[in-house]
Structures are given as C-alpha cells and as structure tokens.
Length: 411
Ligand SMILES: *Cc1c(COP(=O)(O)O)cnc(C)c1O
Image 1 (cartoon, protein in one colour):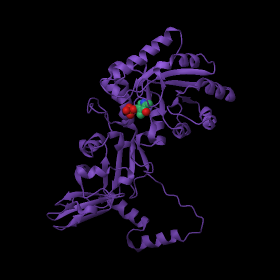
Image 2 (cartoon, rainbow, N blue to C red):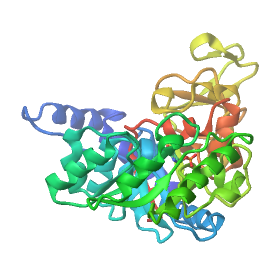
Image 3 (spheres, helix red, strand yellow):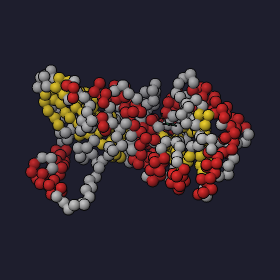
C-alpha cells in the first residue's frame, strides 16, 4: 500500500491535479514555446486514462489450446478489426511469434499493410477486396490475396506481370453464406483457370460457414465435392480451410487442412461452447478510480437517476464508458473488479464514465486499478459481460475503442 500511495502522490503532482506545486508545473508546461510538441508515454497504466492490457502469455496458451482442438493442424489466426479490439500492432506480432500460428488473416487492406509494417513475418491473408491502386503496397509486402471475382485470372496475371512477382492466393468460395466468395456452382472452370496460371500460386481454398446446424453440413458437402472434382483433374488448390471458432467445437468434421479462428485465440468462447476448453481471456479493460464518495439515503446516481441510495452507500467512479467500448447495457448486471472484489455497475454507463456501488464500507480509494473485462473473475469474463449486457461476445471485444492505449504484459 505504501508504494501505491507514494506513486499516487507523485503522479498527482505531476498531473497538476492537486496542490499548488502541480498547478505551477502545469502552467509552466502550457506556457512553453509555441510549436513545442508534447509527448507523454501512453498505455503505461500510470495515468487516469483507461487502457487495455494484452497478455502475451494468454495468447500463447490459447494458441496451444487451439492447436490441440485442431489436432495439430496449422492455425491461420484471424486478427481483423484491430485484432478483435486487442490492437493489431500489439497482438499481431505476438501471434506471429508462436509456432502454432501458420499465418494471420484480416479483411481490410489497411490492416494487411499495417500488420506487415508492425513486423509480422509469416504469411498474411487479405480476405477482402482491394483497389488495384493498392496492389503495389500489397505486393511489396507479400500479402496473400483472396480472389472471388470473375475477372480474377486477368487481374491477378496483370498485377503479377507488372511487379514481376508470383502472387500467393487463397481462393474464396461461397457455399451458401452469400457474403464473399465465388459461388460454388460456377467455380470449377474459374478455379481451373486460376490454378493453372504460372503467375499465381494457389496456397489454399476456403469458405465460411453460416453456423447453423442444419445448413453447415450441406455447405461442407458443396465445398468438398467441388474440391474433389478439381483435384481429380490434377489441379492443386492448396490447403482447404473453413473452421472458425464455432467449427472448432461444433463442426469437428470440418477441420480440413487448416483452421481459421479468431475469437478463441483471444480467450473467449463461441456460442454453446462456454468452458469446453481451457481458454484464457487475453485482455483486460482497465481504468483507475477517480472519485470515491459516500451517498446519503435518497441520493441518486447518473443520468436518468436510475439508482437511488437507500442507506449510506459508498460509490466509486471510473473514467471509462461506452465511448471506450464498455457496453452501455453493462448497467443491467455487469460488475467491475477492484482489489479482488467485484462491484455492480449502477446508474448509467455514460460516454466516459462508469459508476460502481462499493457498499457500506469505504473499501476502495482514488487511484485503485479496476478491471471491467478480463480473466481474473468469472463475473468479468468477456462471455459473462456479453451475457449480462445482452450482446455478442464479439461486440464486447471488437467495440473496444481503437484509441485505448495498449499495454503488453508477460511478453
Ligand atoms: C472473422 C472471420 C473468421 C474468424 O471467426 P471467429 O468466429 O472469430 O473464429 C474466420 N473467417 C472469416 C472469413 C472471418 O471473417
């Protein structure tokens, strides 16, 4: 406790929040020469801004668990949408360093580029469409492409010739999702043409399940029939892959040559699989208490006055809210962990603040670290937060604000 107190006093003075010394140093900063650039280490967790902690050890652990679920097949790790909120530049290189991970996949051109520029060395698959004007950037970074459009043979040949490079591709097939992919029923001649181009190296062929018990088997049949048909003609279509997190648990006959999960790598469970594997949430959404106050009976809390104290009650304010990605609906049953105890969210989650009920004792103080989402208590597990806030666990992760500083631990 002594060290935290010392730290608090030091940081409070530095921030100019309390006391005249702080205020003076604040003024002298502001009056610095025009044009001065301020730089302050972000993401250290030392300030009062919320942050996301990424646990490299948990990512490594989850990759091992996923490889076991996949019975040793290579894992193409999906890191789209800012690595599901964990931060592309933070989580991407950690996953890249793991033996179980054969490559990484994204949907956006900018993310494919950013991933390579963050130092990722393994294959990167862009599972989305790109503008031809972006081709130089993609080719220079050896990004694998996922063609599904009719003119792919001409387009890819022309790009390959222009840059004097053979292009790696994974053919994207539509077996019933109707989102992306070449419709399976007219894909055979297209596959044959692409796969026989000397400018193109087909590394894989893939599809996406609709994740329904009735239709997934039919999708798999369409995919495998087509693969068998073209392979029978001696055409190499690389590794077949279809399994995302859901299929790792629920479509054990669809693991094929490689698996392609996202969610489970970050330690969360797809629907219907809660606790079916030893996955560990690899992130913590954290903030520090900025106000502790005792309410009088009848005092209300936040917009809408959704909460009224019935007896003298301590409450604490955290400077993190729905603009940071913490669910608005967390107030309908979510809790926050402070000093190994969990406390209910009360009142309303506002854009930048969340208030928790501490109880009759003043059990926390300003500066205490709070965890809103993380592995440390089942009540703040991302899947629990999702259930209690009545939303998808994908949203709990992916809606985390891109701007939250990332702090990597256990690296
Ligand atoms: C997001 C995505 C995945 C990974 O899905 P999870 O459910 O997170 O495992 C796999 N393939 C494609 C095409 C995707 O868009």
